[in-house]
Structures are given as C-alpha cells and as structure tokens.
Length: 395
Image 1: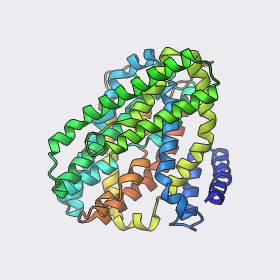
Image 2 (image 1 turned 30 degrees about the vertical axis):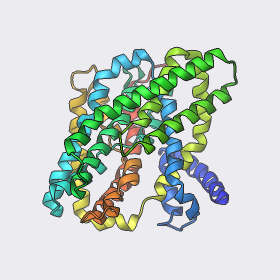
Image 3 (image 1 turned 90 degrees about the vertical axis):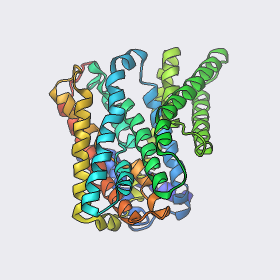
Image 4 (image 1 turned 120 degrees about the horizontal axis):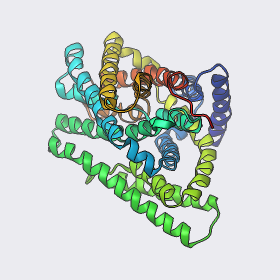
C-alpha cells in the first residue's frame, strides 16, 4: 500500500505540473491520472488503499474546508450572508426536481427513483470548487465583492440539502418507515448542529491556544484531530440525527480567525502545506472511482438529463444572486462555479444499487457520467472564468 501512495504522489505532482503548464487546472490532471491508474484503468492502485479511499478523501476535504474557514472574516460573512444562503439551496432544489421529472419521461422512472437520481446529481463538489475559490482569494480576484467566499459558503451547505433530500427519497422507496417530511426537517437541524458544534470546538481551541503556549504545528494537529472527531460523531449518530460536520469544520476556522486573527494567518499557511499532499490524494482517489465503461451505459438520455439539470441549476444560481451588487460577468462566473460534480456523486452514486433499487445500475451510470463531464469541464470553466470575468484587486 505504501508503494501505491508513492506512485500517486510522484505521478500526481507530475500530472498537476503538466496540466498547469498547458493552462488547465492542476486538479484536472490528478483526476485524469486517477481514472487512468485506477481499478477501471490500468489498475495500479493497491486495492487495500482503495478500501480506505473514502477516509483519505474525507481527510483532504477537512483540510481544504479548514483553510476556507480560516479565510472567512465576520465582515465578509455579513456581506455575503443572504446570497450565500440562497445559493445553498435554490440551485440544488431546481436541479434535483428538474432531473426527477425528466428522468420519469426519458427513463420511465417513478418519481421517487427520479428524485434519488436528481439529488445525487444536485450536489456541487466542494472538493473541486473550494480549492479554486481559495486560489482566486489569494490572487485577489473578485474579493472586492467577496465572490469566492460567497461561493465557498454556499457550496458547502449545498451538499447538506442534496444528501438529506436524497435520503428522504431513498427512505420512501425502501419503505423504511421513515417520515419523508421529518427527514426534510432535518436539513435546518443538521446545519444548525454543525455550526453549533464547530463554534463550540473553535471556542475551546481559542481558549487553549490563548492559555498555553505551543508551536503552530501542534495547534494544527489539535485542530485536525478535533475536526476528525466531529466528523466521526456525525458518522456514529447518523441513524439518530444528521450533523453537517463539514460545515462545522469550516466554522472552526471562522471562529479562530475571528478571535485570534494573527494565529489564523499563520495556521492557514500551515494548512496550505498540508494541502499539497492532501490535494493529490483527494483528486487521484476521486478519479479512481470513475468507471468509464459504466458511464456510457446511460447513453444519450443520460447526457440530456445532466445538461437539463445544469440548465436548471444555472437558473437557480442566477435567481440567487439577483438583487446583489454583482454585474453580469460576475453572475456568469457564479453560474460556472456551480457546475462541477465529483465527491458526493462518487460517494453516494452506488447506494441505490446496493439498496436494491430498481434501475440502480442506471442511476450509478448517470452519476459517473456527470463526474466525467462536469468535473473537468467545470474546473476549466471556473479557471478561465475567474481570469476573464472577475475584477483583479491590485496588491
């Protein structure tokens, strides 16, 4: 397994360098590498490592969301609060229900089956979006209107809505005796619990860091350890109550920046270094989940459904930013930023199939096709869009 990690590190860095050299996002190179060397390609990745793939990907997501939280100030949050909240649910709801209806017509699904597919596809990928937004923040692109921060915040909550509504449709299909409306009510509860737990953890860390002198490296270990524990609490309580743990992780960073700004700046630099390693693992292992041959099983109808969903999502993003001070180019950038799918689709795309849902194999095929189309094209569109559409604040 250690040999495989070495292969992923060396080839991942090379792929990242090559794609950036030709003007494409480096993460795209790592995604492609994962597809090529994964079990559905030349099969170079040790299968024991793949068994822990979800844990490695979660670790990387925790790192990138801590970085994001350490960059969100109270002033920025006040500025982007309302549009970020709208972005967190309007685009996803429009996309999910549009796909549900169209899949009934094109695939002959029941509405419940269509709902499962719709809300698997409705989740935007924070793994793709957040790193690119952080780069634009560092380059001071769109920061005069807090656009990268707004998109990071909205995208992080977007997944909570999509996964919860997907769970409601799955429960309805399997007759698990779960009240669908009760499941939907869990959305605000999940978000509130995530923020509350993250805020409490952040305040505890602030107290510890203020009272005891320690190196920044040790602080990073404490923060990572507590963030992983919060994610573990979510997993252990999943059957009883949903907790938006990743939102809680981001809140930890926000609280530390608010209370100890100088410390937060130094910690952010530390997490930047960890991200160099975590980024490679995340995108190569996400790519390794993609079964290209399976994706084509959905045929032309799968492509039509994905494009219709993206159109509905784009309208949702536009409605979410209407009334803000964003100009047309900046609104277009927000639309482009909400297109990539990857992490959630790779994580839950196979659940209907394993749960015995009729046409679960077709649902998985469309989910895989969505990753193949939207992850690379979305990453390219965000990179080019950020350079062409966002104002550049001179340092």
